[in-house]
Length: 87
Ligand SMILES: [Zn+2]
Image (cartoon, rainbow, N blue to C red; front, top):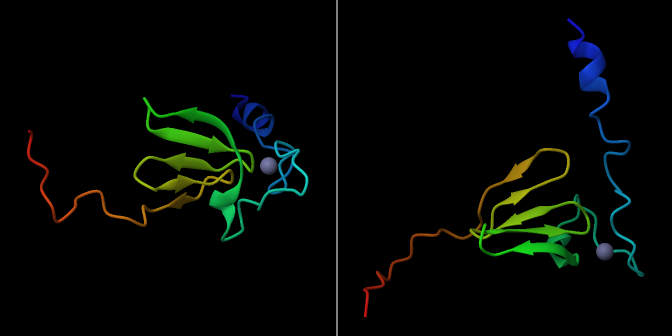
């Protein structure tokens, strides 16, 4: 029963200003409304997500996962009014 000890090692050292971004000038933080303007550090279109240098995970459906674990719901609906028919 050492759950307390093991969970403690997993916490990130800082809640914001993660050391990932080394750009000058620094990119918007994950708390900023401009967070999507940060640089891409990983892009996996085949898996539908991208990682920004401020720690934000950006999903293909415009949803976001912030480094502190918060989830931002997609701001654009995937289902469009236009039904695309196969050619
Ligand atoms: Zn950056």
